Amino acid sequence: MIIVMQHGASAAQIAAAVSRVEGLGYKASLIKGEERTIIGVVGDDRPIDRSQFETLDGVEKTMPVLKPFKLASRDMHPMDTHVNLNHAPVGGPRIAVMAGPCSVEGRSQIIEVAHMVKEAGAVALRGGAFKPRTSPYSFQGLGEEGLRYLAEAREATGLPIVTEAMSVEQIPVVCEYADVIQIGARNMQNYDLLRAAGKANKPVLLKRGMMSTIEELLMSAEYVLAGGNAQVMLCERGIRTFEKYTRNTTDINAIPVLKQMTHLPVVLDPSHGTGKWEYVAAVARAGIAAGADGLIIEVHQNPTEAMSDGAQSLKPEKFAALVRECQAVAAAVGRG
Image (cartoon, rainbow, N blue to C red):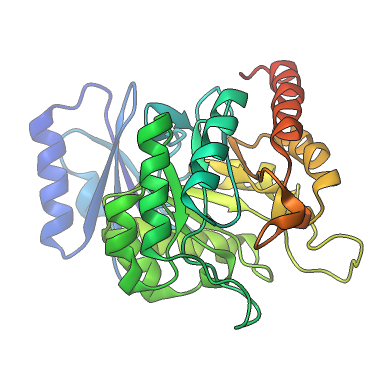
């Protein structure tokens, strides 16, 4: 349920409504718009008697939120949420591009590629220190050593760091070094991990699972939001279908659907969505045309020697060309 306060409702009237909500054992989420304040009421499945709020001074009306995801819904939060990455907002009029290698392979490698992607226009550096791999014999990442190298790359370039946490135990160390916690596709429904991310004071990039519906993605985001962390970005990274010619199938449909259903920023990962570097630029352009707020791209100096996902990684010069092409598409749809 949401409580819509009257235009010009006083701070005391808003506080009284919040107090009534919390006094009944519910959680109040305050959303201040330009003209009105909205109070989101979230709790268990008990039915709420809306009349007990409608009689309060300063209350204009109450409305039910019928969707199972409450805090992620536009019904609860009609204005777009902007997530700031070192003063570069994701969700605003400008497209945010995050880029870097799939895995941190060494100190010089990550610092070198950080300079390259920044020069091309990236606003954040991605790189995996903990890698969930299908085979236990594949490269699993450098762990905390890799996080230290990422932190050095940030010091050298000023780019905030996006990196994955695979378990609850990894959240503290990732928060120590990184600026954004990535929850990968394989962990989208790891509810303990989502709850831990909800308690962290860091933005979260939540990737859609390979076989997950849009609603399941939003319900996973709800776990993070319900934990008190409002800094959530959703990532479409391709789903598994019967198609064999790409690694996954990029669900471009998901971008406008999510933009309609939720206030959270939507990021597209065309690297995982295609699995082949030669298709990444085209799908990135399509994502921006469809309304994506950001892109996350895999870039490697020498993809043929990459320790993971080389086939979908762009060389730095290809990434620079992609950014230029995406700038033209963004301008065509009224964005930067």
